[in-house]
Length: 200
Image: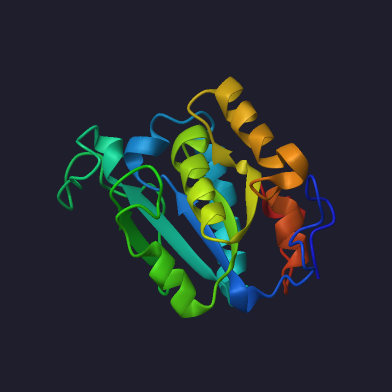
């Protein structure tokens, strides 16, 4: 089972979309990123539908908070409850909330260990700050050998032009950072598919 509509190749590359190996990684999940992102409301609704479907299929949902969103030094995470630290997403029971020390969700965090403990090596990237937190986390995942899909309509950019360029870089050289697809394509490929009509 794979997503034929993904660009530039059917995803995942091995044709094995196994929900037990799947994790939705919501980067920039805090208010400091969502508040600066274009189309954040629509993306939040899409993320809720995707997160529910991934969890229902047996996958993992991870919400990332980034210390650099508060404009403090990236190595100094803000205290819980501090400005910019509140989540803009709504974790469900069983979801993970991971705190990172920078834009890359793997930097100074337990994200890699948590994913490997679950056997999750197939990642769906989405969230707020498409050209910042989402892109940086995607590149960190790629460097660590994860097979990645970025959801084009579930990654809200700070600026539409830079967001579009960031998505384009994913598909260069035959998919140097993985593939890109709309959320509806992922939902249709998961067990117990969600009707496209539920998306905004």
